[in-house]
Structure formats: C-alpha cells, structure tokens
Amino acid sequence: MQLRPVARMHSDFPSKFGIPRQPGLVPQLRGRVVFEPEFRNPDAVRGLSGFSHIWLVWEFSESIRDRWSPTVRPPRLGGEARMGVFATRSPFRPNPIGLSSVALESVESDPRFGPVLVVRGADLMDGSPIFDIKPYVASDIHADARLGFSARVPHERLEVVFPEELRARVPAASREALLGVLAEDPRPAYQDDPERVYGLGFAGVNVRFTVADGTLTVREVAPVDLW
Image 1: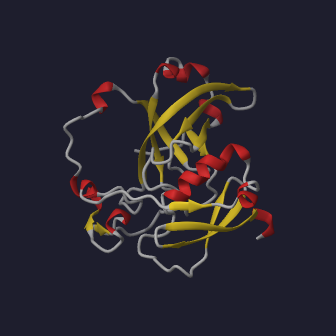
Image 2: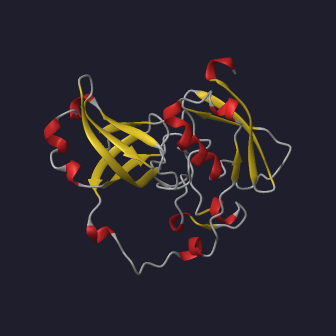
Image 3: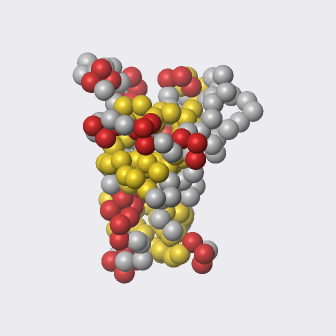
C-alpha cells in the first residue's frame, strides 16, 4: 500500500519543540487543514460540518528513522522508564503515523485553496502531511476504558509568568494558545535545569524561557528573523 498526503496542517509550530504531547491538551491552539490540489473538491467534505470532532491520520515527518526500537521512553513517565512502543504514542515507530482527535471549528471555502478545515487542539507541526480525515462518532467513546500507565501519572501544569511587555510582542490571535503551550511544559522530560534558557518558535516569534520550582518565566520574545 502506498500512502499519499490528502492535506497538510498549517499551525503555529515551525518545529517539533513545544508541540503538546497529546491532542486536545491546549484547546486554544488553532490550525487549518489545507487540502492538496487534487483533493480540493467541496464534495469530498460534504456533511463534515455536522460533526464537532474529527480524526486526523498523519505522518511524523520529522521523526522518520531507518531503524526502530521495541521500547521507548514516554515523556509522561519522566523519560526514564521504558515501555513497549505499541503501548505508547511515541513518534518513533516502525511506521511514523500519528492519530489525533481534534475539534472541528468550521469548514471554510477559501478562494485559493478550496475547502479548508479550521481545527482546535491539534498536536501537529506546520506542514505535517495528513493521509486521511475521518469523523469522530459516538462509538469512538468508551466510558469504561482502562488507561494503563497514563492513569497512574498525575498531569501537572506549570505556572506561567509572562510580562505584559513581552506578551504584547506575540500576535494577539495566538497569545492564549501560547500560554497554554507554555503551561504544558515544552521541555524534554529528562531536563530539569533551572539555569537553562529554552527557545520555542511559535506564531512567527521565538520565545525564550526558564523553568524553576514549577514556574515557567518568559525572558525574551523576538521575531524569528532576529535570531
């Protein structure tokens, strides 16, 4: 079977760093699913606007490797414990395929790109190839589901200190989403150096920050072309 992209994600993330580790963690994140030229047919999305959520089947395009490992280190476990690759959502898989449930805000008609899907909560990098789109239906909900090791680890968010003069340098439409991304702790799970300054590209700016004692402090915000 040969897969070909039907669409690509347009998001505020120019690189992998800082992308939430699961879909829906930052519902303020807004993205656009733009179809490839041969799939820009309005009939292909007829009826889709009646659904509140959709599944995206996509490629971890920046995580492609020639080899695979039967175990990986899930960030949720601090990056130390190993689990079977098929018991995780790690991007480092035999086939680098991602599956994300996202909120469908609207189906728009763009004069250049045809039908465009406006989504929220997506965990995809800008330009990620999307292989398929499916509606989220009632049978996808499992109220009695067991959550394995993910249920044993509390999900903790960081307190974010973001001075107003720096926040004003972020595009207004992306500020709330950026706060959500920072609160989710963009650092690699194995790093905990209060002196280290991290850099996150987001919505056309680079954000430098430090993390200490559960608090993330933004130190600098500058346009991408200045760094």
